[in-house]
Length: 450
Image 1 (tube, rainbow, N blue to C red):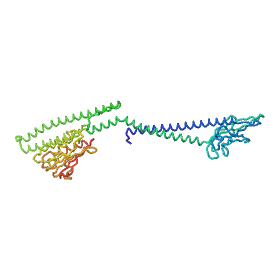
Image 2 (spheres, rainbow, N blue to C red):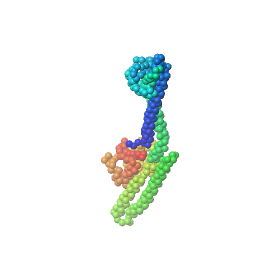
Image 3 (spheres, rainbow, N blue to C red):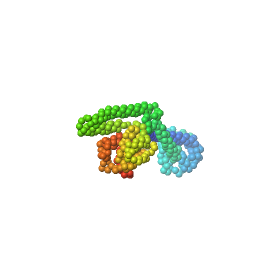
Image 4 (spheres, rainbow, N blue to C red):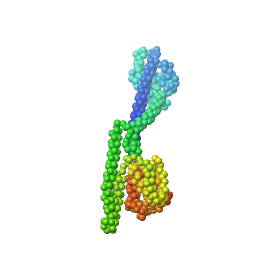
């Protein structure tokens, strides 16, 4: 799964945060339960001591319990707080007023004098209770010791409600804290990764021809990366320029001897006219091949790092020039190009392929030529239309081949559309031959931004 760095970091931080808050919640819940249980035991122990302090004796020195205790909870029926005093042989069995009519079901534990025993059981009424039993030894006036068990019982429901309330409150607070922290983390990550997004945007701008360098100010961690990218761009531009210079030198080196040979072939003194004609044809053929291969080499050496070239101005210059070349035809031409339409490449390439397309339109058109274009979502689309005979669908592919002309009667080398196709293909685009509403051909150049 190809996830972005932002999503990866956010997911990782979310998992860590969830685990941390989950463990924190469990620890706090356990600590609160332990604290509540400890407080309950201490409360029961204090109540047992208070119960023992309230005990009295009869005229024989035996243990007696008052009807009313100082803690009002022992005196209210079903208060949830109960007391019980009994002897192991059940010869003495006393209950507080709050326990009247209730079966506490704490059993009859055998608790040694001085021993404390906690127990948590379900009472006969179905509720859960916790009890503290304390063993004492009581000596009467005759010196006879009798063992008693003092028990204080408390209903667990209020404590369970307290624990549940705490747990719910803890859940809401931790959940809210998790949400706030996740939002904060998202904002921090977005702010922290902004320089990377800025680098990506600037690279896209370079690819589309809007810039030629990374010009933003970046953090120290990215300075090395951006400097290296700028260095690579400069090297690519330098290599491209050297490549073009070499091609230009090669073109001059080859064309000069060819021009001399062609001139010699045209001289009547060179010998037999038939041989001269054959020599001229071969020289012309060599010239075609050299021109085509140089154009292809130039096309393959193109880069997407060039600045955007305004289309309208370049096309208008070509149209004015062609109007002078084909002055006798009286071609009426029109432009329908947005002012801000830009070609994502070199101006020389734009002039080369649009010059060839428009030359075909002027050459094969009758009276009208229209050049239009628009920016699409991922590039530009250029149309060159004429009102000539058009190109049959069966010949749509063959006219893009080197050496094939739409009209064999017309002069030319037959490599124009092949060069156009090569140039556009070098930019990742496509040349389409269609039918124009003017009646002739509609040559469409589709060129992506990248």
